[in-house]
Amino acid sequence: MEAMIQIKDVTKTFIGRDNTVEALKGINLDIEKGAICGIIGMSGAGKSTLVRCLNFLEKPTSGTVLVEGRDLRTMNDAQLRKTRTEIAMIFQHFNLLMQRNVVDNICFPLEIVGMKRREAKKRAAELLEIVGLSDKAKAYPAQLSGGQKQRVAIARALANNPKILLCDEATSALDPTTTKSILALLKEINEKYGITIVIITHEMTVVQEICNQVAIIDNGNLVESGSVEEVFSRPKTKAAQKLVFQGGGSTEVMRGKRCVRIVFRENSSFEPVIGNMVLACKAPVNILLADTKDIGGIAHGQMVLQLPEDGVTAEKMIHYLKERNLTVEELTDYVG
Image (cartoon, rainbow, N blue to C red):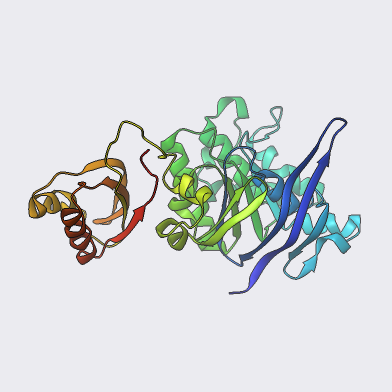
């Protein structure tokens, strides 16, 4: 696949009066053209700094950022401004102009590039249709819900027909139902218009919902990257495991040490796999974590099970699960 964005050995150091912070430490990452790439990490990991380096709102201390093969560092101010019209951005808190109504908020970036008022309003109407807010054209931000404000922000970001859309924690301020609808809208925009989308988030569920590529940032380092299925199914690093397992680390009250993580990808959601395994093996298990969903009658998600201490029974259970096309991964130090 052709790379839309290439990040090569990017570092970013902030030098304060009393301390120096290395926010990014030699990041190397290619983001494919037309992909939805999730950049995920805990608070303070450096992910928001990285996304701001992608349009040079934050200039890297060293390293290179290429957009469609063009090096942002070699551009003069005029060239950089032109390139930024191709790289739109939406934020957690919407950043709408409160004194302007919805249409005028969407027209704002078009005014900056010199588009005539009539053409700008026509384009705004088209964008409101895309985000499902045609009936809110004359409303002001204070009259809108959080989800509606974010839809306006998305419409405004799309005004100049960008090739890339950067989303910095764009769903963090929204409730779960609204988050789901915004993610569905972003996926639709990606599929319909081929816009490359980069989503900054600390929530693995957001990545699982719509991303096909993921990069995990921890303490300024890129610790793992690849397809979402690959990283979700077989996380290699502690940072990735912490995010995939949703914080399910040491649990001192559990006595048994042998735990497995199973990943559902193709099993029927109508088949009680765990219940049947318990009946077949004649031994109970503890479910330490469960995150599964039914998508089109197929179970997707993961479970972490504590197996019986009896080794023969545990092996029998692992064999049973693998026979049913489940990915089974043994975990070490999951319970303390």
